[in-house]
Image 1: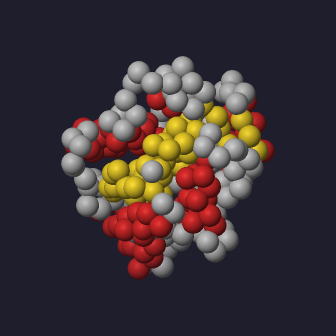
Image 2: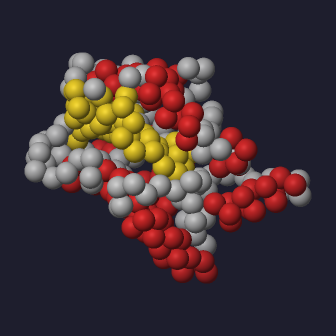
Image 3: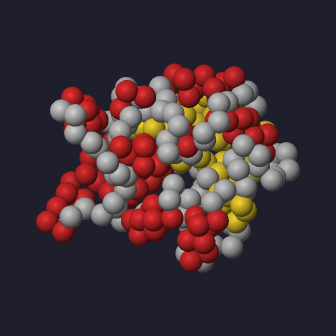
Length: 254
């Protein structure tokens, strides 16, 4: 990511439909796995500009939330938000002792790691720093065939199938607690937009993480409502979504 991408991320993380809606989906999945009433130490591995750090405090129960990112630009924005428990390092080499955390989150980070096998190394590191019974929440972009200009702008190295993600986590030693797609209701629109542009030979340039045009601000509420509807569905313990722009796996360290 470029410095301007972090600026956009920082400006949009609070209210932009995608970020707000995906937090509601995350809550729908994590609330049952990390119920209140217990103090937890939490690591957001690849925290970006820190938009999720304060939000994750709901699961800390008075414990600490630590943000880690390799980018100094990203961590500067975390500090601007007032966060101080920060570390600059790669998610493939976490500077943390074994069994240090109760919850590790990874939001769209694994697909950004450029080296072959780096995502598996990062998953192994998550398991290493979790305490027995600790939980890893991992979200990645789905379907390599949906690669677009957004991926090129952000330097996305890979997109996943849900089975591939779960397989990596299982091989690392996690017990899979929950696995589902998300951002499913909008998948048909994304397919039409991305594949149609490719077929027409038109460039799909730049990141999708950018403000809506003033005349289109009304769309923010509609798109957010779609993700909220998915979140309500996923609150039922056995409900899943069979397809979507994101793949999510929750693993427990035995």
